[in-house]
Image (cartoon, rainbow over all chains, first blue to last red; front, side, top):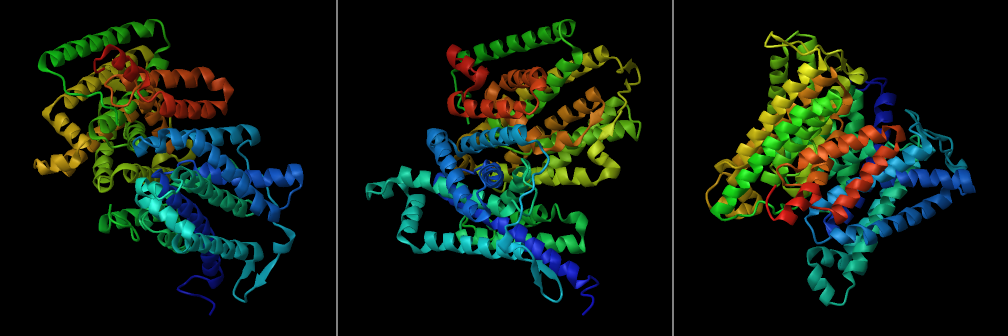
Length: 295
Length: 323
C-alpha cells in the first residue's frame, strides 16, 4: 500500500493525527463555551484569550519559577480558573440581568485587554515551550512516526472531555447544574446556591480553556494571537454542533478537526474555510445545529 | 437594545423631527467648517468610520440584530472599489458603486443565512461568515494582493470633471456622500418600513401574528446595512488609496461595535460621535503602540458595565428627547 487514493499514506495519516490534535482543542474549547453558555447564557468571547493565557502562564511558570509541565497541568487551570472567577464576580455578574448581547460585548472587551497586555509584555513573536522529557520521542507505527506528545494530547483531552461529560450528565453536582440551566429561580428555592454555581461554572469553563492552552504550549509557539485565530473556528464548531448537548460539543470538535485535516490533504486551499462552509451547509439544513435542540 | 425609540404623541414627534433637522443642519455646518481647522484626511477617516458605525447601528437599532461581521462588507467593498479603480481604471463614482454592489450581494447571501438564528447565534454566524471573507481575501492574492493589499489606488476624476487627487476636493465629495447617507438612513428609520422593523425588534411573535413577513423585513434591513457599510469601505479605499486585510479583519467589526456603543446604541447620531471619539483616540494614542488595544478593551468593558447608553444616549436621556 504505497498510495491511497493518490495520496501517500504518510501524508494522509499525518494529517489525520494533526486534525485530531486540532480537534481536541476545538472539543475542549467548545465544551467550555457550551458549559458557560448553558448556565450564564453568555458566549464567552474571552475564551480564546483565556486559552492563550493558559499557554503563557504555563510558559511563565516554567521559565520564571522552574515549575514543570506536569505541575502546570494542575496549576494553570487553577490559576486561570481563579482569574475567571474574578471576572465573573466583578464584571459578568453585573450584567447578568441584561440582554445576552451585552455579555458578548463585555467578554469581547475583556479579550482585547488580555491580548493587548500579553502583546505588550511578550511581543507578537512566539515563545518556545519544551516538550516534557517523559513525552519526548515517538512511536514508529510502520506507516508513520507518531510523536508521543501528540498522542498524549489526543488521549488526555479526550479523557478530560469525557470526564466533564460524566460529571455533568451523571453526577449530583451535574444535575444541580442542569436544573439551574433549566430554571434558575426554581432551583434556588430548593436551597441550591445558584449564583455560586454560576461563578464556579464560569471558572470551570475558563479552566478548561486554560488546560487546552497548556496542552497547546509545546505544540504551537506560545504567542498572544494563538487564541484569536482559534476562537472564531470554535464559534463555527459551536454553531455546527448546536449548543444543546455536551456530547455534541465533544464529537463535533473532534470530527471537524478531522475534516479540516483531511481537507489539507485533498484540497489545501480550502482548509482554512472548510469549517465555515460546513457551518453554512448545516445552517441551511438544520439551523439549530447537528446536536442542538431547536431554539 | 436601547429603548430610546419610544412612541411619543404627535406634537412631540414633530418637535423631535425639528430637533433632528436642526442637528443635521448643525452637522452640515460643522462639515463645512472643519477642513479649515483639521487635517481633511483625518476628518475623512472619521466620516468613513462614522458611516460604517451608522450602518452597523441601523441594523442593531432598527432590527435588533447585532452583527459581528460588518468588516466583511466594509472590507470587500473596499477591495472591489480599489480593484475597479486600479485595474479596470473605472472612474471613482463607478468604483464606489461597484464596491456597494459587492457589499449588497454579500449582504443578501450572509443575511439570508444569518437571520435563520437569533441573538447570540446571529452574532456568531455573522462573525464566522465574515471570517470566510477574511480567509478568501488572504488567499486570493491575484485580486486582493494578499498581505500587501491593493496599493496606489487612483482617486480619478469624479464624473470626468472634478479632480479628486487633492485632499480638499475629495473631502467635499466624501462629506456630501456622508450627509446623503445619513439623510437616507434617517428616512429609512422613520419610514413605515422602519416602524415595522422596530415592531419586529420589540416583539417578533406579535409582528408575525400581525401578518408581517418578518424574515423579509429582517433581510431587507440587513442588506441595507451591508450596502451602507460597503459605501463606507469604498470611500475609505479612495481616501487612503489603499485596501488591506485590516479592512476585512474581525477587529474592524469590533471597532464598528465599539463606536456605536461609545456613541449610544440605537441612537440616530450616536455612532457619528462614537466614531470621532474612537478615531481621535487611535490617532493620538498611536504612539502608545500595543496599549491602544488595551485601552479599547477598557473602554468596551466600561461602556458595557457603567455607560450603556453611550454619550449621545446619555444626552438624550438628560433632555428626554430621542437623538
